[in-house]
Length: 146
Picture 1: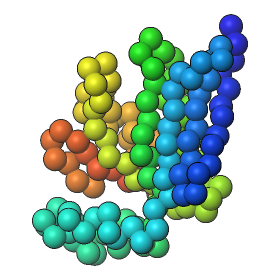
Picture 2: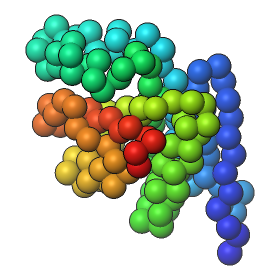
Picture 3: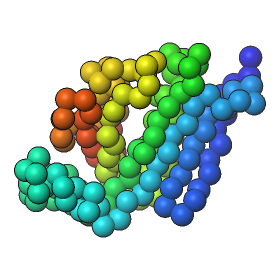
Picture 4: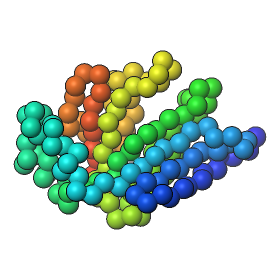
């Protein structure tokens, strides 16, 4: 059995890390580096889901690393690949000098985790909910405290 290897591709402010086993991609995480991050939360602030003070407390530098996508192929789930990809993503964000990571936990497809299991998974990496709409949960983590 071949070990899991990782391939990292960098494209401007986006990093894609693929987990590869037996020459096949079994999972990947896409990390985006967001600057002028306030724009990402303007609607939430306007709608009263977050205040300006809450935003400033969570994102003091008005920037963050965003987990845009995390997925593991059907048939490969439950093998710890998502955990390994999360560790790689967090370490990549740290290497780029980021302090905060953000993600929108939203179940995908029929074989993915439900929202409670998904937020539980992310909480093991220090992520905390910001906005919970019921079907998805926006979360953040100070990655230097993980």
